Length: 200
Image 1 (tube, rainbow, N blue to C red):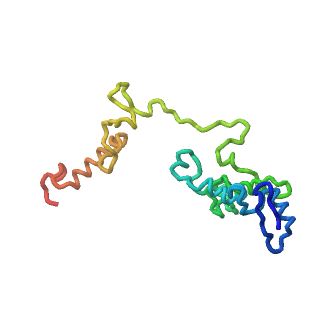
Image 2 (cartoon, rainbow, N blue to C red):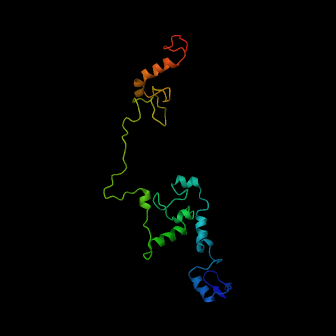
């Protein structure tokens, strides 16, 4: 039998079959023995520790804090190869899975793809980035300068034009189509000006 003196005084554990008692002492010195009553389970059980960290996380709080709410790929858009995080349905990125993947990626003895975090985040890689294009904003929202004409979302923009439909074309089209629409109205409408009471 082996005795864990420092962590649990007086506790004696029977060795498992095929396990050297000296090996248990070595494992206990590194804190790698499971079911040690002198320690919390979260101290020696990595999967349990990750589970407890993420147990009471809600999608509402994660959305409010701009954290993960669905499984995301580590590769650029359109990548058709194997993505471990997507294949194994890894939602939270603070677990042993990501730590193991990072260790494998940075291992110099392995051929691995580089990290695409900057690429996915939209950080430019050119020496002189131009930045996002900013469309002009002056005069886009009509306003007469008074306090009675509020800007959205605090007010409704009033307009003199009716909403566009098949009966109300844009003002720029009304001039060119007014003559055609008038002739079509006179020809097809019963009692129109082109009928003059004549039978059809």
